Image 1 (cartoon, rainbow, N blue to C red):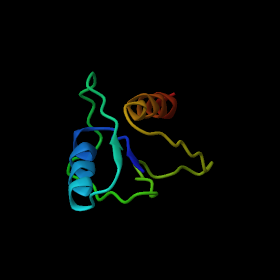
Image 2 (cartoon, rainbow, N blue to C red; image 1 turned 120 degrees about the horizontal axis):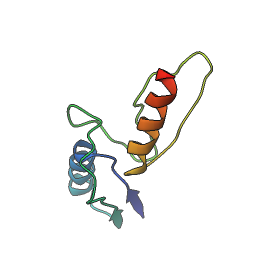
Image 3 (cartoon, one colour; image 1 turned 135 degrees about the vertical axis):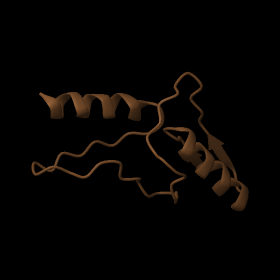
Length: 83
């Protein structure tokens, strides 16, 4: 079973397009309370592949997240970066 947990409207569109083109047992987890936008256009999604949202810094920190939690990770990252 394929599980998709998009982080914003653009990832949602990409996931829906992928699921329509590749019919199989799937679960699409949607967050309805957030209007947070990460992408400026529809990203290319592939099962099992992470989307890179920010370039790494010299200390090689990595944050992995799915769905609406990405909004909180991004806010944390930018607060940390600006301090």
